[in-house]
Length: 314
Image (cartoon, rainbow, N blue to C red):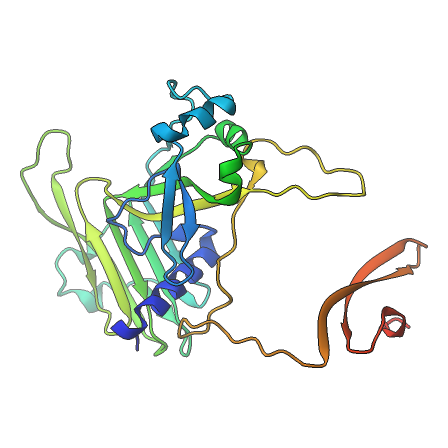
């Protein structure tokens, strides 16, 4: 079972599991906003995004001008995307089931819950679930990303290009007991609210008995549970004919997680090195059936050269 002593391990495991399914980074502390246009790095120890600046700061304006972006215009300002009804994501070792309303008949309003479900986690594995109600995404346009890619400062950091905002979120990380967990977003009694705001309060219900759970509800889109990080794609020297020219968002790529694969307890899997294998690559060249010259990288053992490598086809 997760404990406070393994908090950082649990946090990184949740980040890894959700990133694996969505290609985006979950924010372990959704009430703390991660603004679009921030740039920085991912803390390898915690999985938190550590901002180092913003493309919307006054200090960054000269760089925008040199990239062909007028800071006084709204060209580079984040664009608002249409609101979605919900966003749900869970890790590969988790299966979503229909919530049995009858077995939870004692929970007021569960039948009409806007988000509800039961998630089964495979025993012996750790599972993650992320739920958002009525998310709205803010993003930097593709054209602006193309211009930003020419800025040297951004070529050595990660840029927040998309952020999901929502009024209600739920995050769950299981232990390895293989439990079923049911989660529902319930509507509370109507409340008197200012004009232009929602008049119904929401609250999360869950029957979880283990693992870690975090959730929050508000009438405003004040939580940022998920965001996209990109870094400038590094150009490669190619001897063959070049690929089609990339533009806009194609000039950026999602960075990998800054740690090795984690085990089910959230700790990095140790790498055991065979002392008989050297860590340099040799290129072996041979002709295939069409008389094409094929170059294949081969790991060489000590006192071995590529001429001594036997191929399965030989």
